[in-house]
Structures are given as structure tokens and as C-alpha cells.
Image 1 (cartoon, rainbow, N blue to C red):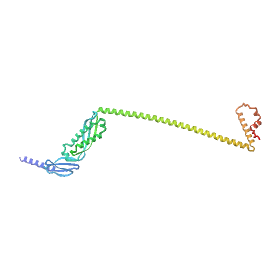
Image 2 (tube, rainbow, N blue to C red):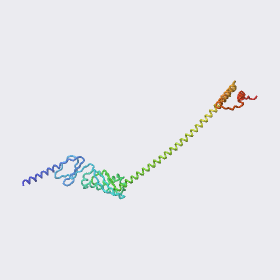
Image 3 (cartoon, rainbow, N blue to C red):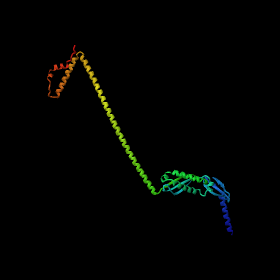
Image 4 (cartoon, helix red, strand yellow):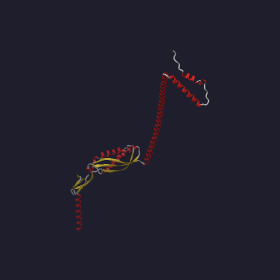
Length: 306
């Protein structure tokens, strides 16, 4: 009997020591301990050392004030064009009022997940598949606004929501892949045709410029040639005129007539010898044999009548 009493009091002592030990609390930074006294909210303990009253105070809830990330499990959503897609995501939220997070709702994490899934189904139901895949930011902002409005009494703040994956059925993926390939092939053909067109235009412009350049060059060549010939004729005429003037002046000088006769005679003999060298048979007019008379006739100058 004594052994039973001893065991009972030993158990009571151990329980009391445990309760006294549990009354000592060291709260880390960014954590909050909700304390109830006799079943009623008493106070919120922040970071630091705290002592509770044994058997009167109770640590009811323990929260972290850090931002939390909560996975939203994949769920089936139906788009506006009746395509089933599997969507999952992540909620990022933070407790701003530990008291309301403790007493305002039973489980704020579960409630946030359920609200996110409900809102996601509603938003995706108003969009077609193509827009659903391309408008993730719009879906995220809509879900954040809905959860944030509903979670205000819960003492939490939803910072953002991120869709991780939107997975259509395999048949839809195959159709989208074929459509994408067709678009790529079409774009490739358009680019090739545009490149060939530009190439032909460039070649035709090159031929045109080449023909224009050739015609301009030929025109300039002819102009230059004509100008050269005109200059040559003009220079030759001037030289001939000057030569005639010089000859006329020389004839009018003393002894000029004799010099002219000598030059004519010399030129005649040289030309005659040149002709004789080129052929072995020569027909000579009779007047040629009378050389002095011929030279006199060639060099005879008519005097002006008195």
C-alpha cells in the first residue's frame, strides 16, 4: 500500500515539475505564442524570455510571422471552350494578426488553399485555352485579389499566387504541336518567297543601273570623241592657215619665188622616185620629159594686171 502511495506522489511530483518547466518560454524572433488564461485569450508573447503561471496559463497557438509558401495541389479545370486542363500553383502568405489567425478561422492554410482552387476554377472557366496559357499573370492577380479580400478577417495577408503548370490533355497538346509546326512552315515559306522576291528586285535594279551607266558612259565617250575631232579639225585648220600665211609671206619676200620653185622641184623628184620603186612598169606622160617646162608651169605666178 505504501508502494502505491509512493508511486502516486512520485507521478504527481513529476507532473508538477513538468508543468513548472513548461511555464518557461523562450520565443525566437518572428514567432508569436498565443497564451490563454483559464480558457480565455490573455496575451501574445513575442521574441524573448517569458514565464507562464502554472495550471492557469496555457500556450494555445504558436505562429510564425515569416512569409509562408503553401502548395496548391493539381486540380482539373474546364476552360470556356470545354477543354480540361490540370492546374497547380503556390500561395505566398503572411500572418499580420496572430490573434485573428488563431480565433478567426480553424485552419487558415487549408481555407486559403480551398479558396485559391475555387477562384482558379472560376477564372479559367471564363477563358479559352489559348488565353489561359498566355494569361497566367491575369489569373494570378485575380486569385490574389479574391483570397486577400476573403482572408482579411483571418488576420493573414496574401502577397502573391503563382501558377506552376497548366497541362492540357495529350490530344490537345498534339494538336497544338501540329498547329505550331504548320505556322513555322508557313512562316518559313513566306520568308523564302520574300527573300526570292527581294533578290529578283535587287538583280533587276542592278541590271537597270548597269544599263544606265553603260549608256551614260557611251554617251560621254561619243561626246568626248566628237569634241576631240572638232578640236583636232580646228587645230589642223589653224595650222594650215598659219602655214599658208607663212608660205605667202615667204613668197612675197626677196628670193621667195626661187625657194618655192626649189621645194616643188625637190618634192616632185622625190615622189617620182618613190613611185618608181614601187613598180617596175611606169607610164610617163610626155610632158614629164620636159621637166624644166613643167616646173616653170607649176611655179608660174600670175602677176596682177596694171
